[in-house]
Length: 463
Ligand code: SAH
Ligand code: F3S
Image 1 (spheres, rainbow, N blue to C red):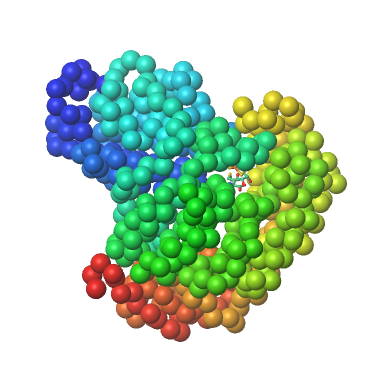
Image 2: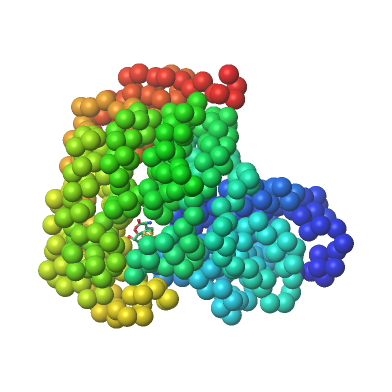
């Protein structure tokens, strides 16, 4: 940091060339994407503007993930690359925010001494003053968790889009034995329905058509006497928003009232991300997940009975401490039995501070975990292939996002079941339109087809 900035009387949001520019790079889950928008909102109010690239910025923040060791290693790698911008611009402030900041706290400065600010997920209101204090010495650290912080009243700064994220719940109270989230994100708390609705209306006014409600165990949401089913009903009343999604629900927090609400509300998408984690009851109990395989199957059966075309995806961990070959096989069996549309699959990564890291030795070698993961991926790929192939010949409504990566001949969007669809577009197609697509071919992760009907969007803001 230069002496000029450190001793400057003027606010640090104002550089010598006008407002200071911030660039935020996001790692990890959707919650972090939403938090990045929140940080942009806070910094915008403090006079910062957004830079398009890290090399054009006065402040670069890495909004980080700590869920697996690999995630943290990647972020250290990226942070060291930023050093070169610091050589070019000694005034550059580098910050680490979010879960890894909360997890590693001051030790980040020992490994990466060029990091100026370390801010946990509950410190974002204080970001402007943390950046203001950044200087040549030790990093400025704020990793205080606040069990009441829901960022009420702070408008996130969003770019135009069609599908937006709204955080309705922060933290987690489940304490699954492998998981670091409760330690780095603190206790579960719901945002007020008023705040949620304000954000959903803002999205609608910007022309968004879909909203995704976020929480670690989103269906355990509660604010005073409003539960998740009540909140979903409220959100579906917002004009201009035609699709409502939510992620991730916790298996045992599905109530009959919620299942009925999901079945009744047309705007709530028939798609569900329901983390299974393991197909072995011994492992599920060691993970403290609070359900058995039988409970999980009952829940998916109930959901499928109420919503027959529901698409179900999941998260699975292989190689949990002590997982035997039979237990691994049990997971493969349940995966086959449920028939998930797609899955996020992980090898167990020991996370310091968790119950498992203290009491359950990481017994499986990395090559063995990798081999198990590969078996699971191979099985899931074949299931996904069949699930996607089953849509060939059907017509699906797709929310249009924009041209595909390979050019304007095919546009892309998502079906109600959250499957990626590439299609020959109709004339005058635009992001935010709905199109009906006849599916002609499919791979294990993409549907291909042709648009046969087109409902252009009426932008609430411009109408
Ligand atoms: N709230 C979600 C979990 C969020 S973390 C739930 O309901 O379970 C996202 C996923 O990361 C988890 O579902 C889990 O599959 C994976 N994960 C979490 N901790 C992990 C660890 N220590 N090792 C490997 N994978 C992990
Ligand atoms: Fe983690 Fe379990 Fe919560 S996986 S986020 S502790 S539900």
